[in-house]
Length: 298
Image 1 (spheres, rainbow, N blue to C red):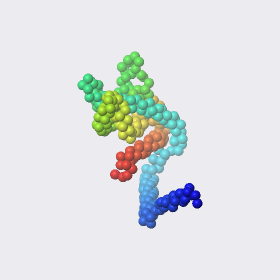
Image 2: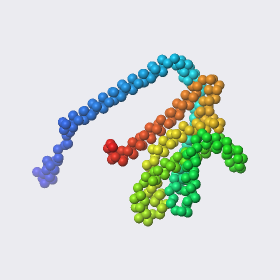
Image 3: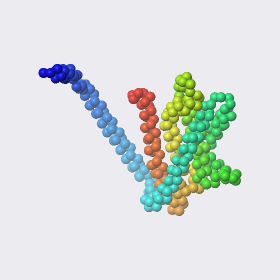
Image 4: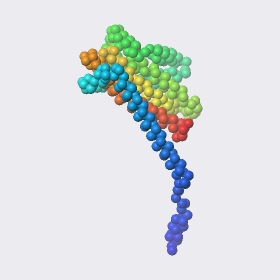
């Protein structure tokens, strides 16, 4: 036998044995799987019971035939769907345009409120005034004020398109809320992060851009998405200005047929968009919680 063969044989003899689960661990895993199956079975059974009880309770009520005819008419549903869907596209467009401007306005206001130099006091005061005023005005009232007030000024260059005016009102309203979300995220960054950045000779602007804001934005993504879920629904409020979005299209069909099923069509379209966003928000929040706890449970 050569030296190489003897060395190979020695290395094979010294290999550690393959790891094998113990009987205790196997029993533990089997017990956990059994618990999981029982939990799924109980949850499924209870859900079925609750759903059946709700269905029986609703369909056995005295007014169910009238409700079914007024709100669940298949003919009215099919007739209204194309127009309501076309209006819903306008809702999505308003949402996407407003979202970009809201992020910009909210971040700028939050950064301005964080400036500590006395020379920036007027800007800080304006930022505080903006958040206080526009968070205090109901969104639908603000839409009325902007939608009818700006055209009434008759200033040259001011917009008169109701969609544009509605987007401006949404940006003003939600920009104030998002500014507070960003400010909370900025203040949640530990002061040691700023101190470490300044010790590396970074200016205040560089510290905010490269150290503070990236951490703050990551922390506030779930609450921001919650605000945008509300924003998507509130685009329907712009219907008071007259654009043919989903709610206005539903109102037109209801007025012509005296059947409320078109409202159900609009509601289902909004649900189809907001529910996935809400679940995505929950996913991000859960992932952030796992990161904070190192993958364990608190």
